[in-house]
Amino acid sequence: YAFAREQLHWTVMNCTQTIESQAVSGRAAELLHLQEGEPSLYVSSTTYLANGRAVVHTRSYFHGNHVHFTHQFSR
Image 1 (cartoon, rainbow, N blue to C red):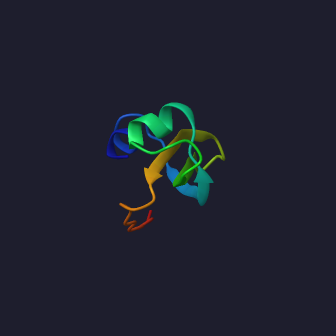
Image 2 (cartoon, rainbow, N blue to C red; image 1 turned 60 degrees about the horizontal axis):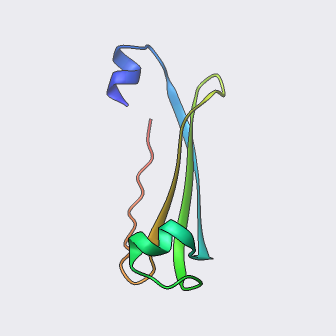
C-alpha cells in the first residue's frame, strides 16, 4: 500500500476478511485439481480507506489440504 499512501495520498484504514469452508465448483475445482463438491477454503477480503471507501476486494479459493494463513494487519 506504499504507492497508495505516497502517490495517491490515500490512508488505508482497515481490512475485513472472511474465511469459510465451501464446496468447490466449476473453474475453481478445475484449477485446484479437486472434484466438484469437495471442500475448499474460500477467502473474501475488502480493504477500506479512512473515509470508508472500499479500494481493494479479493476472492480466493484454496485447496483444503494445503493451507497456512498468517495475518498481520497494521496501520
